[in-house]
Image (cartoon, rainbow, N blue to C red; front, side, top):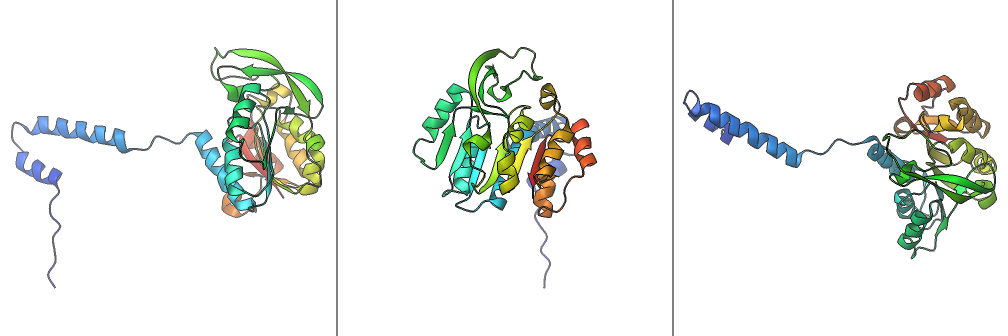
Length: 272
């Protein structure tokens, strides 16, 4: 059997033919320019943490939700997680909470044809009534009940009044909730305190952001969050390790503290 020799590539052929000639330096410059241009067109941009967390959120949903499971989106914003909930569990009755009036109006219009999605124009906490809400006009995602640290010094903030409720006052503890996402810019402990009955009875999988720069403006320490979950029978995980281990590789109390204070991660999972 004869051995076939692969033909030379175009780049190898022109290098061989031009080697030692006066035009070789110019040809190399042109080649490098073409290579850089090609890479700029074909290379994928680096994945941001937010994109990574979005992908992990959907992966967790697919792991824990059945087609008729119930999910809750707290801090719905533009509805990306709610949309994924409706796709992963299309027969489930899902609840979404968004206090900003203009975002709530957009959500209501976006999901107007889906009667299984229940939208609530309010903020969740551990008390009821009304509260002053910090609307970061230049970055809606930073909005919250308290002013937090912002990445840009020139963020524009306006104060609005919003309705305040406990999750336990909206969703009965007997509701078989399987998944909860919390993104409330530092007020996660207050949200959790207002949901103790539901958390303790249903033990859903909870995804939440919790880190320095937001939660510390509420006087919250990582032990407050860890101990609350433990009291509800829930353990804490790094999301990627939960996905990889199938819920076996949980964080110790000290490991969670280290993640928080070292600012290694701010996206966590709590689950049974």
